[in-house]
Length: 166
Image (tube, rainbow, N blue to C red):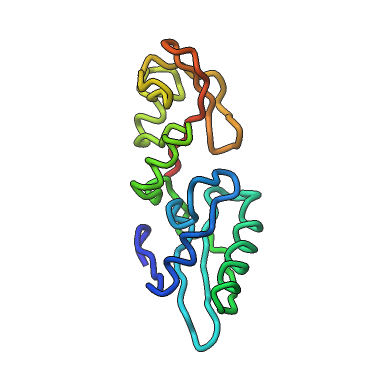
């Protein structure tokens, strides 16, 4: 399996799309790209999930939510946490990126642009309120470790930026 390839039984997609990321409830776990495989073997659904970062506290909740959603759809399941390949923000779907921004979290930039933004070298993180790139880093850490806190110098609104992880 390549880093972007998922093995998901088409019958399970609608069920898994109903499971939200507990830290960003507007995103499904499918939009986040944490589901690496979901296959039906005999009477059991085997799901592999990858954490967005090592030690992510939401993974237990996500696993429980997957089991609950599959149970409600008539499936027994087992969840396995896989660490390799490591999750990357490249796995967030275009729909997920739009949902992030609509929710007030700037979507991750490319790896180099992310470094430029987080080191204060370039004003390239777009404000989720007014769209301006006249923004500045307030803190390397936002509401969770995978986000940084920015503020727009035009509209003065604070917002989170989802850091690029490769």
